[in-house]
Image (tube, rainbow, N blue to C red; front, side, top):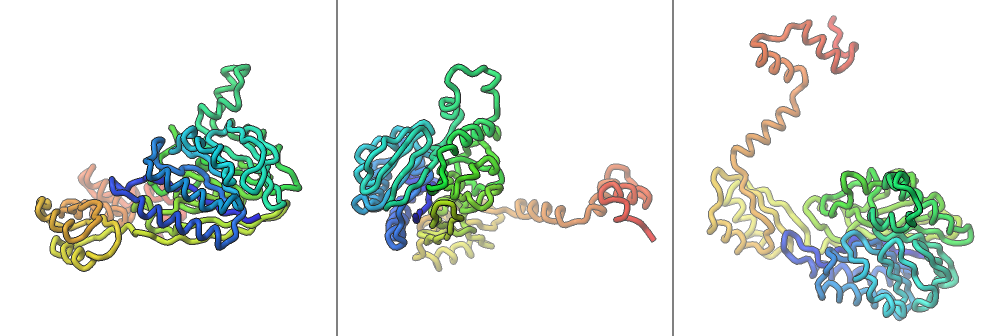
Length: 406
């Protein structure tokens, strides 16, 4: 079975008020093309289809048009789960109509998908949190946990009979219990998958994700992920990466577009997975285009900034403009820059005081500890620190052997 894993599309998301719909449309066109060119059997969208609970009509149309094209008349199966940005009810509202196109929607961890024919494929069995599907004669058991908030998790695990003491277990303990309950559905004769939208400790966030952690409570360790799952397709983190502690079985596909300037240093991608029962999956990252790059321009003066804007006036890119200046920029100067270059996100003047402060911090970090301590001692005591005092301090910091004198 060949799978294409993606997630965190965030349709309708803006960059500080600037629409990204045009870029998202370009990505969706490429996504359908990639699925077709790679003969994908199953598409997994691991949550955060939209950027808000109330997406625009344009964003919804883009999503449903893409699903219909992916389906290819029901030949390809698509599984969609809700993320923390999605409204579960709104996401699955089109479920009955989507079924004919081979599209499976799961809004919460309690979702039970009706068994039967989906496009040209079949759901053999289904209960809360898992489905067994048959695609082109191959069977897969998929544990599918849409964004498990505290409330949704409690609805699954607690029936009202448990004591309050049992309910005080940590979020990770409860997720561990949920995975242990669900992994019993895995079999040796099926392809075994896990799909979820959550945050695993040690994963690197980019900063554009909306936090799903409340005081650190929505965190799990990679070692509680089901051992029997051959591949684990996750959503939430925007940087494509393997999940620490998962023995290379779990991955975040990441978002398809750079959603903040913090993301511009890494390549966006999709994950293609080939696997059969009882085998290690073959995994390949498929790189995506940067449809409209986000750039940070650092200019030494206003004149330098004006020239930079003139030289790049025809380039299609988002710009954060930083200008070294000894005075704040006037309204007409800002207007001149924006008239020269479209899609300037922000213009930040950097004063000599800011530059001096940054240099001071840099110098402080680069100085050796003994020099810093000598300055501190003299400032506090009014005299130079003796060699005996220095030896004692350095031995405490570095250990005895580091500071022995000849």
